[in-house]
Image 1 (cartoon, rainbow, N blue to C red):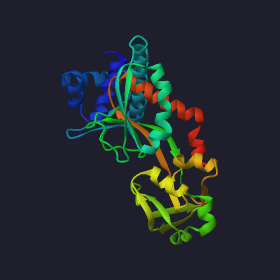
Image 2 (image 1 turned 90 degrees about the vertical axis):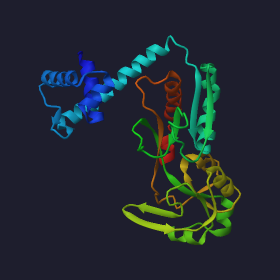
Image 3 (image 1 turned 135 degrees about the vertical axis):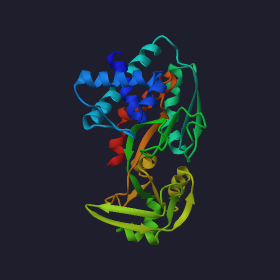
Image 4 (image 1 turned 30 degrees about the horizontal axis):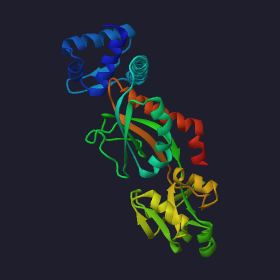
Length: 304
């Protein structure tokens, strides 16, 4: 077995936690898989795996070798995909899902150039504020704001971090006053996004100080665009990721509230099915989205 095949076997063993399961996935006999694993350890001169009759675990150097091997194999597969895409025109239906706000702000603006470059790819955009099951709904790319997925058949790629902020219109603040401390919020009209974690509890931090304020919702909704429109109509103080309201802040339509305090930040991620060969349409769309975020330096803007 060549070194890369040995590496692939080792990664499969580590992922499966079993030589027999790894052997089955690679179409090898258990005895052959065991021999190849021993050959890899012999060639490297280190023990990568601790074996007992009941379990299999990685040694310290094995864990480090696993991390680097997985990265090397991913790079190899990506290189193969790039070469393959050079001669095969990407085509087919690409199903993408994200919140309505993300679709409006960051997916729709991609579409004119993306569809011009890849006219054989058809896009099915599913705006959903609840996370769709990627496998059950045949989703190719999903945008999530959680870092870990219970389903290990998904690969997660970090896109950006964003602050969650409070903001209101100048007219609302002129009429009701600017909150000076977090507890002032209990006297204000709060515009709440229902799908946030504990939406009416706001855990503020500032230079080691922390306080949790329990607010009441004046308007609550399952869509961030309704929250935003209500704030623009002078109806109260919203709590939203900064990426949703950034342009409104720049234009002066909204004013930050208690901006010297921090709420827990959100990590925006791309989730997609883990596959040996990523379809060209998926890789190209992910690359376009990552490039958009990099060129606009969104994370810096949204975490200030």
